[in-house]
Image (cartoon, rainbow, N blue to C red):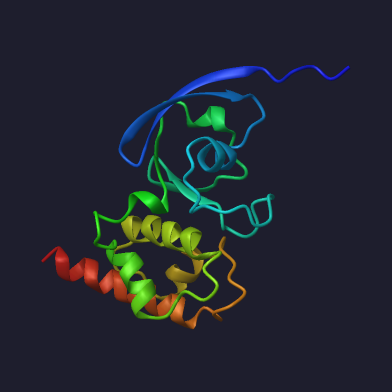
Length: 164
């Protein structure tokens, strides 16, 4: 006989708003965000933490939503790609990805953008090696990464100009 999953009540902030959910003990953060909260930017690519398509920010750190349990979100602050734009204005990193054609099929793009947000919050002027390290958990099968690196560099430059 299969025993039912334990239900865990959680409460956390996501993109600035507080939510409360009852999740199954084994449910992933990615599943809760996509299926319960209908925020579908983060994608399940591999389900084993290798591709980065599910990257979200939890308390400012980039994490793989497919590897984190939903119950671990309790008391945290989560950001997803849906929480970046200000109304009709894209976030500067989103705009840089668009400007530098760093988007092909788009499947990996939300994860890459969220990893870039975390990277630029930690390193305001990353060199190529730092960018490579910061995006090492994200795979893209379409762009060849040249445009992605250009987008990250442009976003860093824009961020630097905006803080002057």
